[in-house]
Length: 256
Image: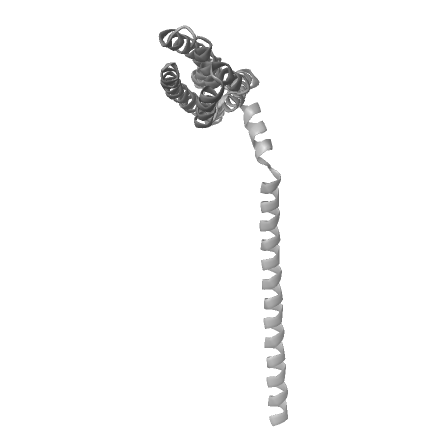
């Protein structure tokens, strides 16, 4: 009898061990399946790149207004990049130029100072040259030449900047227009269907709002470039004004 109980006990322990092993295996299998599914979903989400998502939204918004807003972005960026390159090339080390002109005036006179200005790029050097070119007449004539040519240089610095501000204002307005037209089309579909179905309203509103979002994004991007350009122009203009005052002082001392 004791042997029978021992056999039964051993059998029960083996059965319990088998059940636990099966449960552990099933749990591990389920965990692996969930992990695999999660990894597949993550991989699928990673496969949809930002470029593809942007392209999808662009098509959903309609190529008409979205294309016009995109054209505003392209033209605005082209002008902004051209202005940034021009302004960076126009930036001059004013202190170094002033020191070189002063040394040339003391050593070689007006002609030596003009040669220094000819070999230096930028609006400040051009203004110096115009003032030095009329230094033989009198200081007032040189000052008038500096002021007049300073206005010309300022106009060159601000060239085409107004177009960027136009595209900044135009892009969101085109987006709003696309939104209004999209809403009208959505209500036309509702009227034609004779029933206010949520799918008609939701689809039309989504397409309409995409144009507004895209227009605002374009305006934000161009506004950043515009503010940088304006700040750069102000910095160069301040250098020009400060350098003009310094040049007049140099000419007055040279006349004495």
